[in-house]
Image 1 (tube, rainbow, N blue to C red):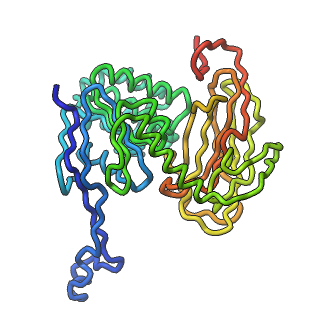
Image 2: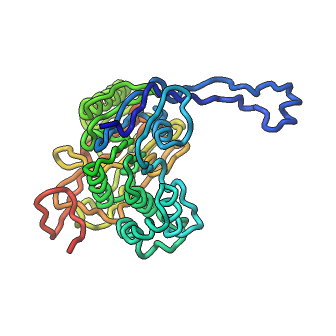
Image 3: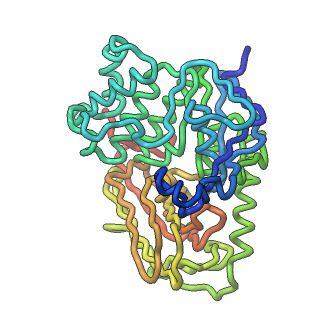
Length: 403
């Protein structure tokens, strides 16, 4: 059996030009053609090799700027490698960027046809699968509205539904499962599992080491464009998490325990970690920390940054009492970039509905350096959440409405 994806000694180089490089021929002539050549070269990828067989999933992990998205773009045929080779066998379904290729003024139905035809289907094939695509995306009431009126979650549902209904033999997913509610994530994971059993080769980029360890057959850790580790997902994800934790612990200052507003004690390197360059000063669960399954939940995070901090990443996760993650997202994955924070501020994550089974959970909150190199402040199992449900669920963490 041949490999679905074969990458050998792959390298991709980008050029950095002078900030005052001439932009017109006249400016170039008048400057004597100075500053036209690249000021420096930057290797986004170097000596990257791996293979993925049909029916396998490879997880790729690494900090921002490690070369993950560049690698996925080369696999998807976007751009050309400067070294090595990329061989992909079969039809590609690619989710390289949320809503990429969607025209904001076209309706969801029109974008669906354009995207599916661009992926290799005929109009007749798209028409046959149209109802299934719309039903999976849960957009029956909005499919004829312009995409500019769609929320981030609606765009994700449509893009994912189109990609998985084009019969892909190779599926490329870039940080996609971090967006959307719990029910949608479970639905997408179930569909991915179906594609795997049908022989689809899948590459998943994720910032979550837990997700890579749970879902993938192999894992690859990139740092500054080069492979740090490649092998069993639990091992690679563990190495990545350990390095990040060590970097954070080394930067964590010695400090006496502090009490939260609700009386919980924050203890350094036990349930609180980080350099404290940005501090999480308060976390509130709205309307209360005890809800019914399916209710709205808001998470308000107040922070203090004594000095200006460039592009920090705020994260929110939900875990059970054993530490198993039920949900995980962050501002980078949701494309909510904060270019600069300074002084006091507040950021809020709203769950339109939280379909968790009955039980006791914890909200974990953190703020990270822009490349995920370490945490500024991270609170683990400090903010309890109690969920009640009238629906009996013997297994699993989800309790969505069903009949």
